[in-house]
Image (cartoon, rainbow, N blue to C red; front, side):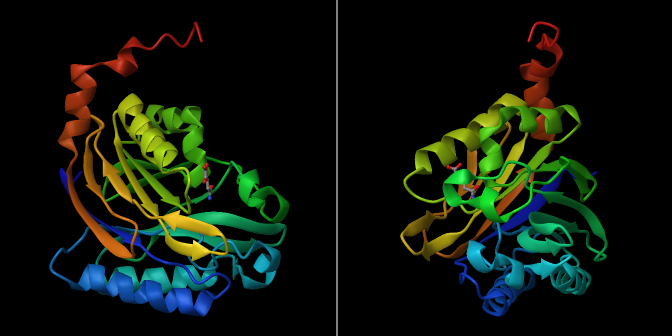
Length: 264
Ligand SMILES: NC(=O)CCC(=O)C(=O)O
């Protein structure tokens, strides 16, 4: 298992309902991240980056079984020798459209997927999207990790389940807008502190209709310290994390040994 991981979070603006434009933009940002001097081990993307919340036309726009996303990411990972937490994307299956993360290793092999299990009514997700049916576990660069998507961070029991299953990293692609910046920062920090793991959260930026997305992609360590945080504009956030901090924090305050699940 690696002890140090270099991360790049692509805080992109998303052209709503324009997958071709979004693939082109994402490809540029990925090349900038992977081809530059930072040499990230893992690249992370925001939620629904292929379509944005074009929900009324989502069936026609969504990526059929994620095939386009998968082919693009597998090629890219092989070419640049980098792992990728690819979004999520709108993914079309036989029974409807899912909000799905696909993850790939340096050889371009798919190493995990997760479809959002809590749909966000305030943005009408439940009217147009299907709920996922399993939690998101994977190993990235040999490190146990979990995946959640945006609204999922309001459900502490999901993060706790992933931590109990071994996660030391929690990836959170998002499209989280104003006026809830305080919720975003507080909930992400709480998930990191209570589960004593790294939270790596990539939010979109830009505006869609009246909705303004504030970016503020963040990397938070298991002690709750913010290692990196973007502003509101389109940018790439780079961070390096030291995984030994997980065991260090867990042995300093042994929350997992002190739990009393028989009482609650
Ligand atoms: N895309 C989302 O799930 C948004 C969640 C959100 O904004 C929230 O406040 O929760």
